[in-house]
Length: 242
Ligand SMILES: *Cc1c(COP(=O)(O)O)cnc(C)c1O
Image (cartoon, rainbow, N blue to C red; front, side):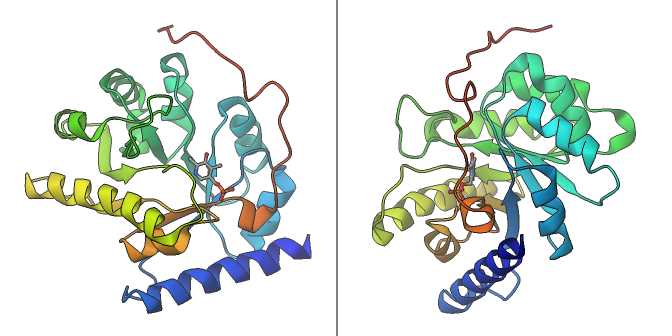
């Protein structure tokens, strides 16, 4: 358990160093702790170290932790693939969703966001490496999707998210993140006012910060290597409205 405190401190100092090294203002980058597969006790430990933003990828698991931790002030972010029959619970229990890549899902989140909660913060996920197997909108389809999503009253379009193909090469990491930054700048030049680049994880957060990340999503470097979740990896649920 004391490990978590030490690891959070190490991640914070990596973020500060990268901010300094790449000319970013101090505090420009928010740390989002990715707690998927981790027990509620680990989130409590991280919360004691001052973290407030936690991200989950699997809805059922997330809901259990959200309930178990209802006594804490946590801002919950959803970062996993979204089946459209799960949107109602996501719209109700999260403050942010980073993984929206199609209009149908955005429309449902908008319709299902409870009126008393305020708008749901949203990032569009972009498939920057163009791998057909990955989720995310293509860069080409992004402008039209963003324009439509920006008009939904119960959503607040904040920016873009990407999970580039893994590579140990800093220059290659940076090139992927630069593509996402340029896509955001392109959208803002058409009149949108997006303020969030959700990019960078345990292994590549420095490259992301160099290219303008405003929020890094860090799991392993805080909580350690994730246990394999039997049944999670291959679960396929039909994507249909309920
Ligand atoms: C799991 C996950 C992360 C965290 O990855 P680490 O390499 O453990 O830091 C970040 N973003 C998304 C979308 C994830 O699914």
